[in-house]
Length: 203
Figure 1 (cartoon, rainbow, N blue to C red):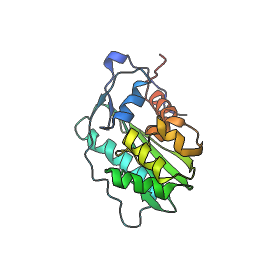
Figure 2 (figure 1 turned 90 degrees about the vertical axis):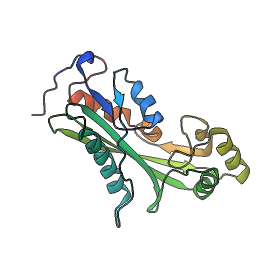
Figure 3 (figure 1 turned 180 degrees about the vertical axis):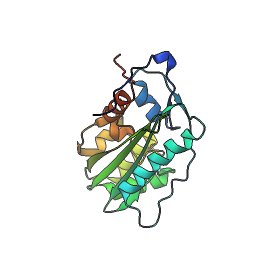
């Protein structure tokens, strides 16, 4: 038998999003439950020989643990995302030049985006999940790439695009189970994990 959830009153919850990402904050706000944000400030470097899925899973877990160290009584939501193609991990571009270069390399290719989730409570229970999204980029001209980067400045996004905005014009198609995962936080899995810990957005 699974753990029976105890439904908490919204004014008694201590729910924390372990992130400084505005995109994740905006996504979690869709569930209309009160929460606060704490930046985990961890080293996100890839370890030698670490696979993309192991990396993205570990980082979400370590983000949650970093916030747990100072917030012992909270339910903590942590997430991480990376894109990869044939094992080549694509991080945040950081500069306009790097963003244009990244999109040029993705032109006409299929890229896998992994979005991890780690939700834990004060009692040591946790839920881990990874959403996989396949993004099929259409063939892009250098003019299209430059114009897109100029308009949306996706320098803090893995893959150098914002799928919730003009980024969708870069694709041929997207294959996934949860469209919010590509933005940065899989809300279907998040809501499911929160219900397990007694937090139901509908109650």
